[in-house]
Length: 291
Length: 326
Image 1 (cartoon, rainbow over the protein chains, first blue to last red):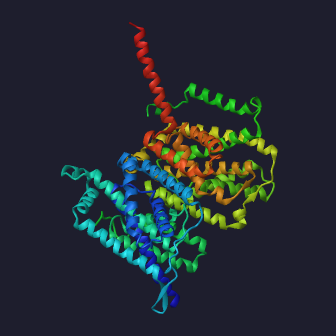
Image 2 (spheres, rainbow over the protein chains, first blue to last red; image 1 turned 30 degrees about the horizontal axis):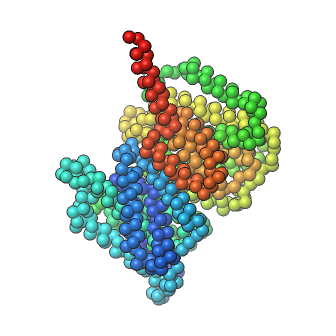
Image 3 (cartoon, rainbow over the protein chains, first blue to last red; image 1 turned 90 degrees about the vertical axis):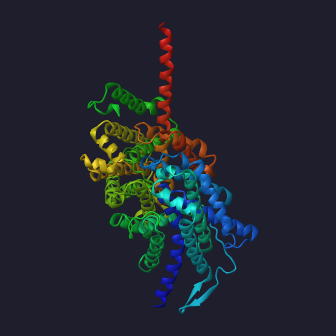
């Protein structure tokens, strides 16, 4: 029973991280219809940025959040303006966008390797090992903080999408970009902004993961896969769906530890992806565009 | 697609192909290859076969796979295991390796029926899962220390022609695919699965067929690779870098063209040998930059570039001829 509570708690906290990773991928796909294969690379970049800020200047990872958000937002805008903008739209552009963003990912990985070598790194703060008692077991303070960020972020995102003019424009572009041009929405600007918000979320996810896991330049391919599982499972664009889907993935992964050898747990996400795509291609909660 | 109708192979194409293969076949005697260049050319043949087979899926069918290393490794390890297990003739072992890889890609049928980005991301996961399973399956693959095959200089020498034969067959198949109803059906599926279904092209059947063919060829080339280098190791054979290599060779040469993957594989081998040996730290970034530039500026790669040059030469000659007749 104690083990069960333990595993459930870690599943909940893992779910927060997965949801943060997935929002970015889902938002970009929902609006631009482009799967950002460089997503894993941005997550890795966010982790390294947090690590540099912490190691060199002693900035606490949670205080570094705004910096990482701004930096990865800028990276996203840059990626959109320099690369993604030039792709053909629609289904014909599919393979091209995959290859282009895949290339971007490789470049990001190489840059990280040149700057920081291939060694494993992690952010170890003074409270990394601290924990508080809860329901008869102990919960890591850091993981609670990660969960907190993961709960606040989607609320902010939801507010942005629902209450602001820009947010309404993003949702409108997701539904029909051509009509938006007709009523005077600058679609290019919305695309760039959306791409930036998506990568900013990826950067945050990277920073948060860096406080929990160790990482190297290859970090992010598993994260890309998991984000994709969550997005597909949750149905594209529904924020509540993404949260629930992240929870399901986390539960399955955490409890798989009980029955599977540890090296196979990373294959769990993949098996789920295939099952979901084959059994419920529209996601568990149906298709909705940014609702 | 103007050249889709003729049923017979045009004489010029057939003749050029036969002469080219014949020249390559006698090249080791005429040019008196050093072991180094023998190595390089044989490796190029194996990679050409793999790239052409990747192109059937990525180019003709429009399904970009980031997991072909799984098939390559499987072919390599199955044939190596067979060769180690007893007096099995090597060609049989390679063929079995290819068959296993082909059957495996059919077994992954549910995943491979996905389309577009879903398919591509599933192949990343599939490739990683297969790599993990084979790395930890030490009884079969020897784990991270790999498998060593007895070194046989005769066999190594002969593998040049085996590799050439495989590459020639595969390029010929590419040509036939491109110039037959089968190729048109693949193009229809690539353009629009639903519309293809409406006009009676069974997307499921043809996709499965292409997957088996592609998997089998990549598997056989993995088997030849294992025999040639006499040492294989799961993290190299199944590695992500290898999957990327198949993508890259085809994209450099020209996705969806016949000669593109051939050119791409040659460029890839040369790049690796002469450039990356000096800058091993830069190879991922260089591959990535190449991908970005090709997709942005010449989506058909070298084949597209050659086509452009040919058109340029023609338009340059045409006005000149006009000027000659007052």
